Amino acid sequence: MTQTTAPSTTTGAGPTAAPVGVTLLNLKVKILRFDPERDKKAHWVTYNVEAQPGDRVVDVINEIKWYQEPGLTFRRSCLHGICGSDAMLINGRNRLACKTLVRDVAKDGGTISVEPIRGLKVEKDLLVDMEPFFDAYRAIMPYFINESPAPAAERIQSEAEADLMAHSSNCILCACCTTSCPIFWVNGSYLGPAAIVQAHRFIFDSRDEATQQRLNIMNQNTGVWRCRTAYNCTEACPRDIPITQLIEEVKRAVMFQQA
Ligand code: SF4
Ligand code: SF4
Ligand code: FES
Image (cartoon, rainbow, N blue to C red; front, side, top):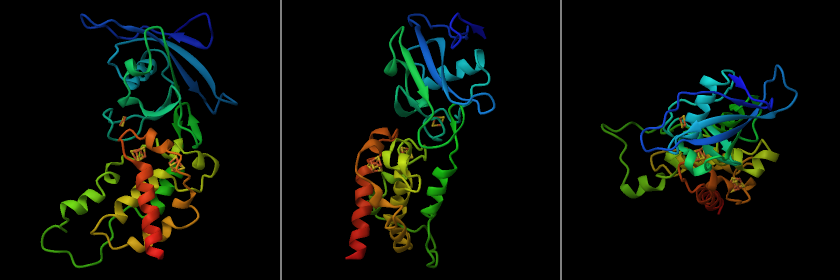
């Protein structure tokens, strides 16, 4: 790692080489760093990198880790928008780093800012404690319940029945929605939009037999009524799930059950 004159800015010669006809972008990547063993509070460090316009932000962060700052800590796994592990705030917006192209968030000479998602305790750098998020997930009983004798073949659904859970079954549990929700920031006991989307997936599954129990969980004071329909969650979802609409559908199901 080569330190530039400014102590909070580092630069490194990564392996980036532009293919013929591709112009590399010179970027500053500003990362909110925090090491619990050294730091009292988080601070920004800026790294100089070169990237191809079609690189993803996760490629740039990987390059910083591999060639400039080995201690940089963050999660990523599949690198293809499937596992949901690299949610982070990129230029102030919750996104998956592996689904965000450099050219969509910065121009040549520009700056990309990267921070941990909000509302969860930061363990180190971009790594947050996901346990409260998964506690909420576990609370909605995220498994299929059907005590009836199994049929000889599959439990069949009509196309219309499958459509009811088409959006919610796309969720990859990345936490972009829940950690963009202002209600979750101020009240961690709120189950949050991701858990409600997961509940929706089973409530609207025609084969599931625990609808009543699930609606009771949604009707508790940690459930759907905390939502103030602010739409942050829908804007944050990398899977384009219409989260606020699904929350409204769950609210209506709770009210219908009570009527
Ligand atoms: S719509 Fe509801 S769940 Fe989504 S961000 Fe707003 S308050 Fe949170
Ligand atoms: S609903 Fe969307 S933003 Fe929320 S956890 Fe699922 S995939 Fe991520
Ligand atoms: S690394 Fe798996 S979703 Fe980005």
